[in-house]
Image 1 (cartoon, one colour):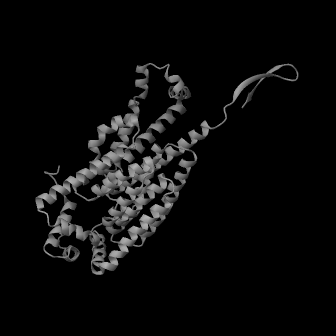
Image 2: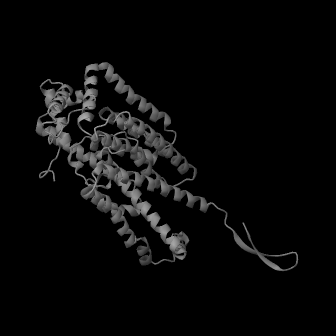
Image 3: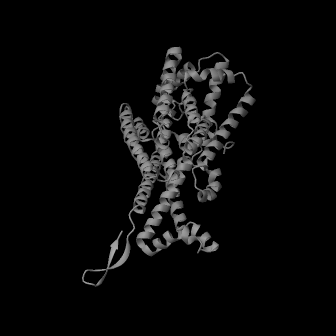
Length: 434
């Protein structure tokens, strides 16, 4: 795919910025000139694509200047190796979310994950976007946090990543949702990230102003608003020639507030009812990514495995409830099969077949996976379909947590046993007593 089609379109932006710095040229000023030139003749050449320019913060320019001293062949090798390592770290971190039985089939799907960001096919892995490295480091640093409560490396990773993409500071909600007593360190890290932004505006006012101008012009010439609710609205308004601000800002703030309240509510329920952390962490991670004001395809790639696990668990839960409603005896037998005391009475062969997923369930899961992928090819474009998939998966995860809470509450109900006793008239009666 990389040799026969387009590849490295984001990597070329970084390479062009390095070339500008090698010749002593301001990459922001050069980018603004390219964008203004495109806008001046956009009507005469409507098929021409708008130029992509360097939009990362001025604090990244010293790093680019140091990299500019390396020869191109070495720089290219180091860059693509780092992105490949970041992608492998994303896979490793996502694999840690799976349960033991899920890892048996998830390991077979890992090679395909890169080509289905957000569970919908796309070639964004070939873009060379720096997000693959940033998310790889951040997610790998989050694993010791949710497993052992050690969040220091996660906070450092998010702070470093925010230098390139300041919107990644929204990831600081994740330790608040899955950890304990993380409000203060998360708030401190967010403050440090905002101070870095303010410090750049004071240290390099001209460069900072040019960076903001580059971002503003980029949104004027390219509808690259992302795939969240506000991004979809912004793209729709842009395509119809209408102003996208402040409507997108209002929608994002309203959506983020509602989502934040929902996530905090779910987190409190998980803690109060001692629900499975394995079931909660993927939902919390997907919900945290939804807080990103500009979630892109490479952002979706980082949560593909959590979305896959949520979808599979939700379908499996719905399938079990459907069969329990249709055949209560089947539900009772399944509950008995999960009883450790009854495990000794099951033969190894019978245990093996009970652990195998139902073929009909696999067909349902495959159909749910194929429908949005077919739609993006034969029907609507990628962005509205992906938003529906993302919101549906998150809702499915919240629903599964609700069912887990109901099951936990049911298990805590007092058990009542029949006991025979003598009535005052001497007759035997049977009552239910606790």
